[in-house]
Length: 432
Image 1 (cartoon, rainbow, N blue to C red):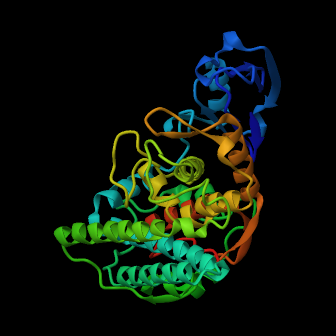
Image 2 (cartoon, one colour):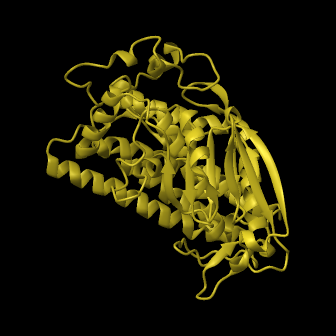
Image 3 (cartoon, rainbow, N blue to C red):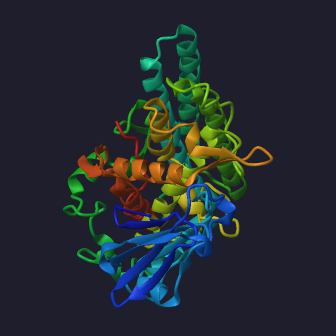
């Protein structure tokens, strides 16, 4: 069990959460070290760790695997806006329980209309994919600078050039116009001084207009290839529904090709433990090597944070623009996390391996070839991820130093403002 950044992670099977007035009372079983994972049930526990956590200290609760949260404990969480997330033992998102959402109905209706409009969806998807590709390119540029092997440098530089071409092609994809306000106008909640017009940055002063006015996104579109502050004229808007669908397919195709190129040289970013962490291609459900297992778990953590950010901004995390809607799939959260994958999740995975903080002992292989993290491995990754989220970096659009943990919330609010029509284009996060 770890409490980090206002999130309680329950990793031990058989944990039990109950309510004690305004606190959560958590009982975590202690099992013999030699006990097999399949036999780790409450009946086989040799001891218990017990802790009381005031509810106002928490923002969310993540339950990995078979643990119990009682109905009174759930009621306390709902009363105080604490979301309860259920994931499989190895990080696959299964369910999210929240109280009645206190959000703008008009914003969500606008989101649904934009999601049903192929050319507006393509415009948002185009920006998200461009941000992801540029962040992937930046990671490979860093790896090329640090690599002393000429052959590997040449491989990296070839993929870097290919990613730059993909970004240039995306810049030619027809753009979508900004989402227009609904016929009944903007909701009262979106007026100045209201909660929905508050700062894009949690724990900071409200966002000033000067920075937005300098960028003037109404006539331009982000060109990640030239840097997060560089803008170039956007392509003409799409004209027909058929062409709009084709544009969206082109954006998805560009993302797929870029990801394939990026992962073809991902293993070259590993400077240590290459024999232990062999990576050939991206695979999942289940991951079949240690690197893919590590990446999948980190992506699950990022996805959780993106769901929380979108919900906080008043958006529906299950209705997206890039990813196709499917039952129980948080499509918009998957959209938002695309720009976070290379520099947050992938970079952390590479760091853990290169610093030899994670090793073969943190994984085990099941019958059939599936690779899974051990409980100590999951705890180590969560601890490292939360430490990374405490670091600060400069947001290029806002020109403010923010904690990494704040950035999904910032991007969710930028997306909400674009949907309302306050910003003509969604601007992805491309850290310098």
